[in-house]
Image (cartoon, rainbow, N blue to C red; front, side, top):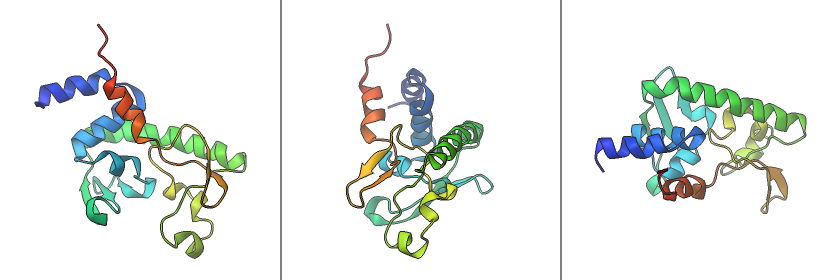
Amino acid sequence: MTKQECQSVIAALSGTYQLMAKLLYGSGLRLTECLRLRVKDVDFAQNHLVVRAGKGDKDRVTLLPDNLKPEITSHLHRVNLQHQDDLKQGYGQVYLPNALARKYPNADRDWAWQYVFPSRNLSNDPRSNIIRRHHASESGLQKQLDKPPNR
């Protein structure tokens, strides 16, 4: 796709889906990498994103576009409010990879470990039977991209 075609596709989206698409385009992230981003992986000072366990199960660093910083900051503010509300209701946990949950027992509630793009709904984790907020679904953005343009 040309730059203009990409911009028109992104412009047809709105809200969080548009922000995701801008981040995919501007940072070269894959969809799952974008969805699995944690708050701690966004480094505003260094203008980069840390992608953990990406393709080939490797970590990498990619750039955070300057023009997206205000949008991401605003988005993270809203996500933090949601997280604080979840904590007040007795939830607020996220899945931690590997043995981190055992090593840091309270990290699953810590703001830094929350997903940048959390799911709208809480769900029951079948592995642990704990109600958590997972990251947003891949199909959400895919469905938005499949919608025919407004005519």
